[in-house]
Figure (cartoon, rainbow, N blue to C red):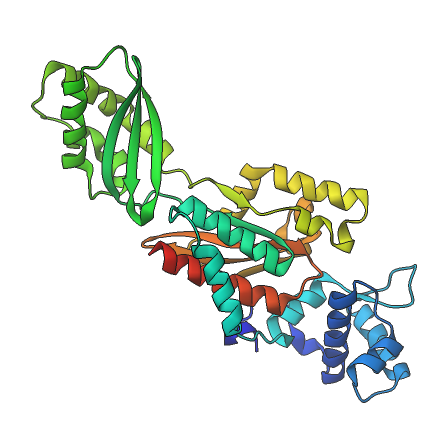
Length: 357
């Protein structure tokens, strides 16, 4: 049975393991997650009360190594779990307990304290997840194609430049600069603002972008307003396309929380972590594949199909803002307390959804 009684997260077949192998594998994983040290048979016998001798544990670990579930570092007599082992653990060995009332209250208080704008809620939620899990908290803002346009404002910022402020469903606000050929009269700005609100409010950004020209056709206005409306007709698809891009793309908590973990004691691993946090657009693309009805998603090590992500596990859950969705979660070493992390990520996504709705 997998976490929360849901369908298993991966496709690893734990049926190839005997009950004894499952017990020993679970003990190795718990030991390694807790200590970051390879687990030996005597340590497992002493700590976990498996009811079998160290010699039997040692033989079972050898069998697990042959099957690809354990790895034997040449500098140690103990063994550590492979990505395949963590997958079996997540899919069929792990049990996830609900958060305590105190944990829920603390998380809610930290996420609620501050501005209700989407960007700020995501930033606080990612930071809270990072602190509570000691992993790297991450969040991806929702794509806004299906966001409903609620209000349009036009503000002059220069003689040849306007700022268009779009108020969207879910509390999102997008600001887009619009270049104009010359000074637009104040009356024309007011007239065009009224027209844009009358013709476009209540539509999704996708609907606005695809049907802008037809919706602004046959509008009776002053010559100055008509000139400005024509700019929106000519450039509207590009302007509203920029507005539909993800909110604030990727939000990251403090990478220093991860840098303190033993896995990043070497310069190479630390460099990989720094590179990961610096490639925001690539990270946004990766996280974007985890939205769209996928719910809770856990990918481990080589499952990512990207060498830069192989040292990591990524745990994310979707949050919803009406018809929109984004993802929030953590990135950390594959040596991770999966049960604790999954419970925190899952509950945080629900909290974010509740706050944004």
